[in-house]
Length: 298
Image 1 (cartoon, rainbow, N blue to C red):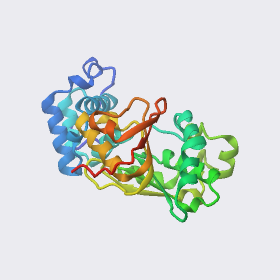
Image 2 (image 1 turned 180 degrees about the horizontal axis):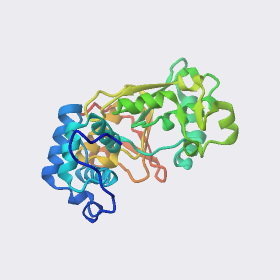
Image 3 (image 1 turned 90 degrees about the horizontal axis):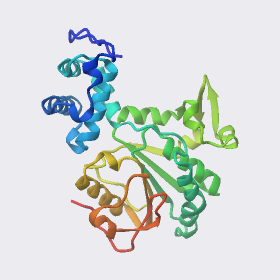
């Protein structure tokens, strides 16, 4: 927890009824605007790019966690404390993840999607896989594990992993995880690819080097091109419908014809993007880009 002495405010027990009653939709609009302006001014992070309800709910949770008796006190703290600015950014942008999250999705990738891509790729052409919103790296490293098991020449596969948080990307590159994050990794795979270090599991160097991590703002930065498979799970739900459409069109522009897109269980195609993809597995939210050329959304 940050040192709040500079603000003059002291946290109180989260059992305080005024704080406990705070929920996302009750966050006053003027306080939300102040918090938005602080983050944009000092960190260049634009809250307007995200759904108000989701963001307000996470801000409210952070205020409850710290136990401020009044929202104004938290706003003053946020303005004065760089450590809290970073902590709030992490609370707003990081999603809980683990290796092989939603195992049935990875089972379909292992048994059908990746073998099909390996079988049909042109001779000498590398496969390009992209984990968008990769958080701590569990998802792209899970892909790396599958590829190492499936492909005789895994070096011919490039895995890109992107996130908006540089701090999280730094941690992801370390490949070091608590036991619960590797709970879905089979014991044989765990023994082959991980080393237990002081209660944490570290992925071996060879696999970590297979994943290339980059900072990326999915709404504003240019995508990778000629990608064969994109995983973007449980991220679209934080964006408005027009922003979701923009992101999905960006993915369509990044994918080769016949390339695959995997979304989260509660996400789906919207509006005109339904014409860009065909569904190949509804339960696992797996889509394939149609053959028609698609240009990137302006």
